[in-house]
Structures are given as structure tokens and as C-alpha cells.
Image 1 (cartoon, rainbow, N blue to C red):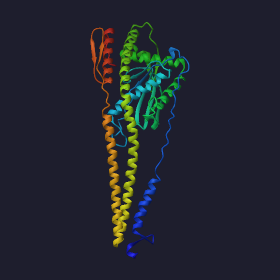
Image 2: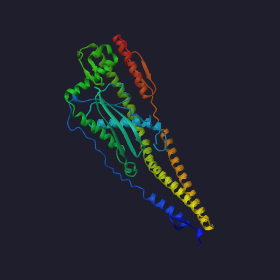
Image 3: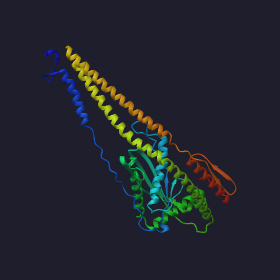
Length: 409
């Protein structure tokens, strides 16, 4: 081989073809060495069941607010797999699933899914979805009582096992049931630290806050709030107080309406369960596939660039055979880069398939007809709007019975 068919590398003559081959081989070996093996487990945290009968006066009612879908700072893109319509549906589904877990622990009074914090209840649970793609679920949960005392704010995360979506051997319960069990267990553990006096205080403050929302002039004097937002009782109305009796009747009506909403939430979650499980199973595979496609696309892009650089170096070395080898290297690099773009196009196709499925899952709420003593009222719109309309009706009923008016609801 003549000197014109060789190039110098650190003072040593090397074949141009060898340079191209070496660059590609090093890139291939480097990226093949970067692959990882994921180890998953089917184990999850079991639900703690209250092992003794609790006196009724120690039972706290729980309201689980529809989860925040986490769309404020989330971008709809192929990396995060965030679909607004799907997230809205998930916000209801996850609240129902958590409420079911809390009820199953036998450590609480009534556990209801509530549309907003307008419902003054003993313990309120709010959640925010951080990540949900079928493979990973991450949520932030905040629990507080009617005193304004925060029990805890925690982030819970779990990876689903592929066994959760195995059609041949389906598992019972939600793919991320472990998260809901952990939240329920943490709440039960905190409640068990409360004294009887603290529990009575929480229940009473719930009632007084509800009463104050209807008649602040009558119930303001029973509650005070610290600069930190903590409520405490300064006095109590007499049990035979006519205003208190009326408020309790109004509160019972409110509970009855919220109980009718449970039928909606339950039906929605049951209807959503099958298509949602299918979506998560597909999403689980799509997320893994897209991650692998992107890894290969990135590898092919860099390997292709390395091949092109090596080809240019060989072509610039001079001589017919060197230029031919350089053209081969450039062509091979171009093929690898094209392959990378093709893989990204495949990933985009998978994303569009998920988008189409997610768009079809927005919940529809049927109008509700409420029979009152003097009229029939039809509530329309979202569940949140229906509940807002209902509270306005309760306000009108209370004002008609007491002859008072206020704008605090």
C-alpha cells in the first residue's frame, strides 16, 4: 500500500478503512455497554386493617377531593405523555380508588369523594398527579383536618410490574394499589395518635365551620383562627339552639346530596376501569418501546455522525482507495442518521395512538333532578358546578327558614 493511501494518527500510519471501522466499532461497543436491565417486583404494601371496633364518637369522616390533574406546569409532549382529557378522568378515578382503600381499612366514618373544599368535613385528602403513564405513577398527597392542622404532605411513587397487565394471568385490584394502601396506612397511623379530646374537637370544628358558612353572624363567636390558619373553639352553642338545629338539618341535606354524587363517582370509576386498564397496559408497553426507540435513535445519530467524520477524514487523505473508503463511511453514517429519524417517526406514531385513546375518555356528567318541597330543580354541568349550584340552593333554603341573608357560601 502506498503512503498516499494511509493517514497519520498520533504519528502512526493507519488505514483509512481501518479508521472508519474503528470509529463505528468503538461507538457500537460504547452504546451497547450503556444498556441497562430493569428489575421489577410484584410486591406491594398491604392495606392495614383496623383490628378493633372503634367507638362511633372516635370515627372521623373523610373527604377525598378530586385529584389535581397536574396540568398547570405539565407540557403535552412525547416525553411526559400528558393528555389533558385523560388526566381529568384520572383525577376522578384515583380519588375513588383511594376512597375505597380508606373505607376498606375500617378505621373511618363515612368516606366520600368530594368535588371541592367547600364541603366542611373532618379530614380532607387532596392529591396531585405528578406522573402517570402506565409504567410509573407518582402523586403528591396532602391530608389535613378541619382544625387546619396538616397531618402530612408526602410524595408517593411506584413502578408497575409487567405482570399487572398480563392478560393471561391478570392481577386483582389496581396496578398501583400499593400507593393507595400506603396513603391509607399513613393516615390510619396518624389518626391512632389522636386523643379522644382531639377527635371530638375536630368533629365539632367541622360542624361549626359548616354552620358559620351559612350564618357567620350567629356562629362567628364560637370559632377563632390563629395567624397560622389553625381553628380552635372559643365556645359552643347550646344543643337546643334553634339556629344550630336548622344548620344540622341543612348539613344532613348536604350529606345526602354528596352521597348521590358517590353513585356518579362509583359508576364513572367502574365504567372507566376496563378502558383505563387497557390504556395503561398499552401505555406501559409504549413508554418502554419509545424509550428503547429513542435510545437507539440517539445511538444511531451519534454513530452515524462518527462514521461520517471518519469517512470525511478518509476521503480527505487523498488517493482513490481512501476516497472510496471515505464515501462508504459517509454513506453508512447517513444511513444510520436516517434510521434514527425513522425510529423517531415510529415513536411519534405510538404517541399519536395514545393521544387518540386518551381523547376519548373525557367524562360526561348527567344532569341531576332534585325534588324540593316547593319546586323541582335541575342541576347541570360538571360535578363541581352541580355541587356549587346545590350549595346555593341550600343557602336559599336556610335564608327562607331563618329570614336572614349572607354571601359567605
